[in-house]
Structure formats: structure tokens, C-alpha cells
Amino acid sequence: MSKGPGLFSDIGKKAKDLLMRDYTSDHKFSISTYSASGVALTSTALKKGGVHAADVTTQYKYKNAVFDVKIDTDSTVLTTVTFTEILPSTKAIVSFKVPDNSSGKLEVQYFHDHAAVTATAALKQNPLIDITATLGTPVISFGAEAGYDTSSKTFTKYNAGISVTKPDACASIILGDKGDSIKASYLHHLDESKRSAAVGEVYRKFSTNENTITVGGLYAIDHSTSVKAKLNNHGTLGALLQHEVLPKSLVTVSSEIDTKALDRHPRFGLSLALKP
Image (tube, rainbow, N blue to C red; front, side, top):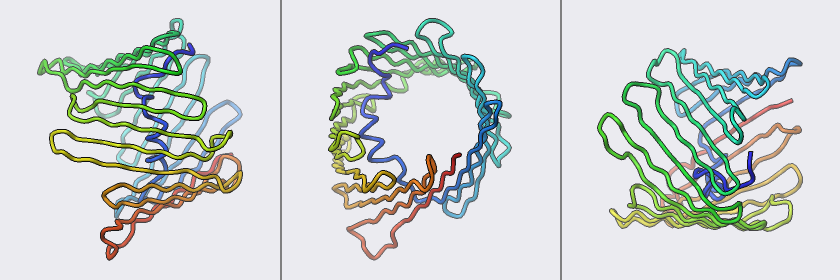
């Protein structure tokens, strides 16, 4: 693949991941195993509120193809096949669910030194079509995305964004919701290893005059333990502790509290992921 700009979905992704990833109010346990033949098997159990769920995911790599099969407790089978370099700088992803016959989807990604383009279509008679494109370099890129419903002949979405990335910082602005919202974010790494960082995000919804300002941070206590925290102007405070108990095996404890309603019980989440 080329070393050009990333996909449209990569715009603002680093700041979003720091503010959102690993924060949870659920209880989750997963364990992964790998066979000598290259098959990876991951079993996951989840408790969300009073609902329990589980799934098993198998991954197998063969030459330029990756096969993923996920089976859950609802007897749903999700199959995803990813082909890399089927053409130069091109990736294709096919996915479908059983027994949902209308869930098939095909995505094609093309990477160039100064552009990245994706096209996604549902595999049915009147498909939903999504197209994204970014232009630029790994340092600065401009992107846009659009979704079109062929059955109603209407656009389901059209958004645009810009991203600036430097070795120690990244910033982005995204105009979303068909021009009804704007989100600006900035992330700054505080050390050379990029294990400590500060982030800020401003979101405005024009139709409702709603503003949300969120600040957060990541701090590495040592080589195996890190903490995260975030706070927005609505008074929602989140905190997270993550510890690597074994190489690649993580235990994560997170909590969220409404500082404007301290009489309410905080929400707690626990995640344990074991990998060999």
C-alpha cells in the first residue's frame, strides 16, 4: 500500500480513540489462542446491563486473503473476507451475515501516494452506496464522504473534513450531519514514546445550538500501566485504568460519573483480554 493520506475515517480518529476507546460500563472477558497452522480463535463473553451475550471469532490468513468468521449466541454467523493487493494498491472486503440474506456488503479501497478512495455497496437489488475520498499527504489531507440510497434516490449523508498530522500532534475539523454539525479536535503527545497525551474536542450542533466541549488525557505510569480521564462541559467525568498483566493481555477498569448529579451511582466497567 502507498504512504499517502489515510482514509476519510482516519480523520480525527486518534483524538476520538483517546476520548472513547476502552471506556465502557459493561463487563467483558475475552481469550485468544493461536494454532500452529495460523488459525486464531477468540472467545468473548459480555454482560451489558442485565443482558448476557457471547461470541466466538475465528481468523485464518492464506496468502493475500484473511478470513474472519464470527458466531454469536443469537445464532448469527458473520463472515468477512479481506483481499489485499488484488490489484496494485487495492484492497477488497466482502462481508455477509447468515441467516440475513440482505446483509451482504462489498467494499473496495484504493490507495495512492496522494489520494485514498473507498466505495461500499450493499449486495442487494436497491443498494445503499457510500463513497469516500481523501487528497493530500500523510501530513495534511482533505476528505469527503457521501451516502446514496438508490431505492429512495436520496443522499443519506455528506460530510467533509481536514486533518493535519505532525510527529507530536494532530488536529482535525469535520463538517458532519449534512452540514448541521462541526467537530474540531486536537491531540498532543507529551513524550517521545507517545504513551502520554492530552486531547481537546469541540462539537457544535447548529440546528439545536448544542455545544459539547471535552478534554481528556492519557498518562503512562510505567511500561505496563496507564490511566486515562476525560471531562465535558455537561459534567460527565470518566476515568480508566489499564494494566498489562501479561504481554498483550490487558485488564481495564473504567468508571463514569455525572458531577452535576452526585447522588446517582457511578457506572463501572471491567474488561479482561488474554492473549498468548
